[in-house]
Length: 388
View 1 (cartoon, rainbow, N blue to C red):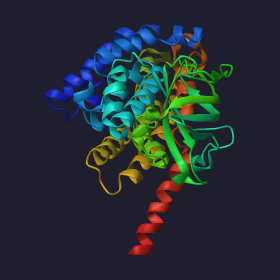
View 2: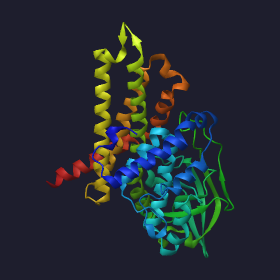
View 3: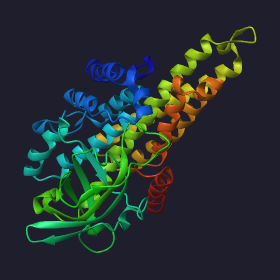
View 4: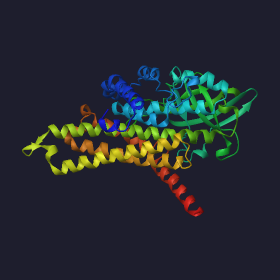
């Protein structure tokens, strides 16, 4: 945790940030490189984070949630990602799933599922993307057909974080006609007959969390596993979940980039070249100045977007998309610059810079690619100026 991250926090906010930072420094940071190398998914540590309220951050406290704000959430994820962006990003996805059940579930669903997800007794995965439906999520083809007191689900989900390891899968499936209004959301438990998983994907980064296909072959789930008890609202649930998911992934980029910056600044301060410390070279200082400015700009934009989501502001979707696009792009560049400042050492695994760069690269793709974020923002601009 750095002093710039603390700026402007009141006493309660500082406790939240320091708790997350302390947990991350003790439970995540010492093992991040080992988990990356061994592809270990640290479920035990995730459950320890859940004991501190980090698995249902902005869910209602009546069902075990922490009852905090989105603004608190992005600050927490920044601190977790300072230690390990891959682990922080998975916890972000789990929080998104938990919030969806808390916000849209029936009273019975909330009572049944949210406490288990808040404790991470039930680890959750988000299942929207398909082999043929990535950015065009409304084109998904996984189908759910009513059969008596059940629904039968058939289809394949692609690039699912936690696949095979998670206990519950929040699955978007088509119950009606083509388009977004024909989509519903279901809760599918891991051991349900017909549910299986593809081979683990071999990825550039995010080695500390599994990624695979989720295969639904006539998976029969009770009708009371239809989230919200209503067909046709699944696309809205998925998209509203992604607003917060985009902020949390941006926060994970920010935390990773801040860690990379701190390592780079320390390195050039101690590295001797041309008769003095590298940090005394004007070009090095200019680079550090630009990196620090990028981090602060990212942080302020992220905090503003989180506040807009907390306030249910009319432009919340646009602000979340802007923040996701800007922060993940900008912070990836900062991490890459930090690697460059290390010279050849930055390319070595033991220094941890190359891991941060690898982990942060995918943030520009998931939760809606940054190209799609531009579409979202551009559509809002076009609508606003047509109406003016």
